[in-house]
Image (cartoon, rainbow, N blue to C red; front, side, top):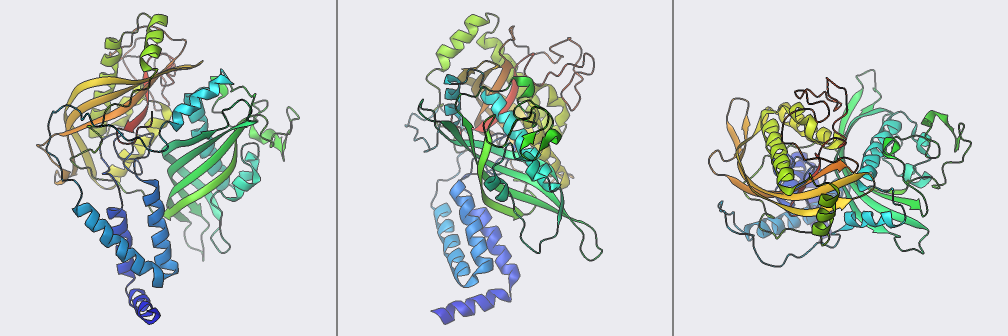
Length: 515
């Protein structure tokens, strides 16, 4: 048997192109659900939307493992990979057939929930010990911390973030092996998916709350030139799992400081932190006593390649699943309406549908700046990245004949700083990809795609009044001219923070929505 495997190893060693083909086949066959090209519906890193991940974590890990085996131990990896590919082909061939578009009622079959369902909802229980805690602000903090960590890593200054990263976490954050070119910069950091997978330590006796977060990201590493050549520029796709903790009894920062990465004690700039002590407030800040700290990082996968733009499809697997409605959605909505009588469900639906249509039109026209007044900063940057990806490949994802069938309220959450309403939007549209010269690449120009997504809108908790479906500045009423920073060019108010009207902060696919 060993001689047979040795012959296979030599055979593949003479044909490296075939080994690369195996990798491509794995990536195509081991995706558990189709990735959609529509805005928020798939130009993330799997089949999830702007704020979620829809593919199977175990499948991604298996791909990395098999490719590693093929490269490092081909005598084992190549036969095993061939077996997996054959099994995947058989599985796909025996799977469900594509469905034609229909307008039938949702299935009444019982929905079987994933094991990790509702982990993000568990975050809300932190308010039991910290009334100032806001899931919206916590997620903004994580986005900012992730970007700051890569910026510091690129400049060789990761130690300046010791207030937020334990030494063990810093050591596991994309370490560079001896002999690798010196890293000079990390740029173009895009968080394609950030998902809370576990929340522990909520019981009163626990000394700390522990949160596990899974990131799927893209960034570009610049490395030192070798042999007098040009500096290298390497696009990287990565999967990371962060383990964070915060001591019981701490109070969350106010909104204006929530996403600022400075001294966690007094807010001074990180340049004021010398070693482990802030020179401004004289506090030792690397103990995790003041804010969230990353205790450990698991680098699940890292591949040097640009993100692939998926080309859409016809059927979405979760459309007929029952709506996952939170038990407290209706009572919380009634409480919100009592606090703000001008907020009616009809008015909210009108704004949500207007935003939905604007996003589809802007995505199709590749004019993403026109949706700047309606989306949060992080969601805007995520989707802009994928529009640019289409442009680089000379492709356009056309969304046409958009029809909204209905909206269903799935969740209503109110905290000290933000109100959040999640609705499930049922719609249909023509969804296809074409080249610059109009040649059809994927999809259908005549057959609609029926789909549903969960959209989460947020508004500042101190704001009241009827939601507006008009395209104007919600602060000064001027015609909408919003810059890329999210500020009105007339009154200079930042209107993308949710302080004036409801803005979209998350898009999640129906088959991965966790409540």
